Length: 237
Ligand code: UDP
Image: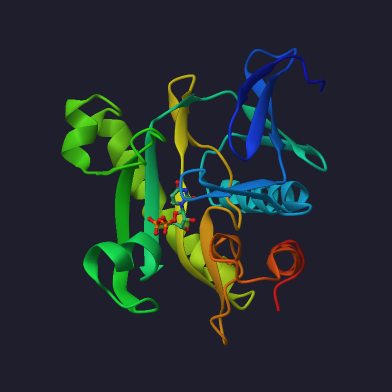
């Protein structure tokens, strides 16, 4: 499958058209950004790792019956995916308090949540991805009632499957963000699932193994991404 034209460039990925109008190539860059693009940098080989980790996790979720945009891992930084009309809603699921939840509600970081929390954010860099709820999604038509139900069902099921997957590999899935899109009338899981969009802590030590190392200059960023790659793409411990 060959890359034809660049159709979109985001902060961490580029999309290219292919000969097949239903398929696009998702190219994973090493560029890293944080705080709405204010902090910029590079994480060496992040693109290769995120492509591998996402491919593995999409295959795992497909086997559980989740419909995803994943078609094929093409090479180091390229994944063939189904072309989506993106639903402009970020679905965040949390198992442990961290990030914006701690800031917004004053909950201490690391507090284990009694049950998962699902949140929605409106995908808009200009507005800094504001938090929204079901009513906003309905009234502004960002997703139909059926699609919204699917986002919630998928979000919680994916959380429980990924939580166990990571736990078997000594990683605590603290929280993560999912994006969905439409393809031929169906809702598919899109984007990527990688240490860029998940908080992953070592199960025993709580050491951070995700983009927070870059966000907060914690050091050893590449080493921790590599460790996640080995744990996710190798055999369970
Ligand atoms: N997240 C993301 N992209 C975003 C916002 C959040 O991938 O634009 C991920 C983030 O890495 C974390 C989870 O979603 O795993 C929850 O993020 P949170 O709301 O705590 O915001 P943050 O602390 O990242 O500002």
